[in-house]
Image (cartoon, rainbow, N blue to C red; front, side, top):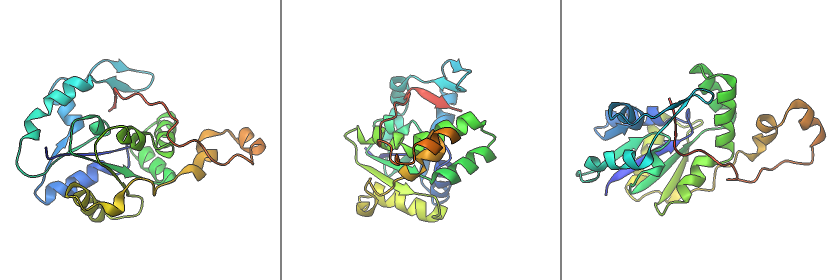
Length: 206
């Protein structure tokens, strides 16, 4: 199987990296567009602005790509739940991520939810729970080309320097999880349990 997942919190750079890979001649499946075009978008949760997606049906719908020659990539924040050969998790420093999401027009509650997810390594932990090799790339200040190079290195078995564990946003906990009042009375608390956030894997953020 040569299907490679490019995943990460919304705003970490998946679409840009996917575009770069396409410009180099690689096939990249836009998972969001694939979900819509195959009629897999479920009911809308208006409060969270997310749709339900049946992950089993989504996984089955990707079967045509698994038998193709060469590397095929799929990008989207649900891609790590799909059967694939490699998972690459893109990361981004929380404040930069928040700026990117606000520029997209995300409401502040949705910005905070995604930034909190990034701080707590939610997608990285979900990916690590699979039996699939996982790599991570910090895209905060790296060029799109450099990030695409990293994805290719991981996909081709050259990702020794991209193993998980080098990215740590726990110093951002106070800013994104506590109110101003709470920050004033919890100065001794600085670290948050990594991977303790319970996500909703069947949600698709449009």
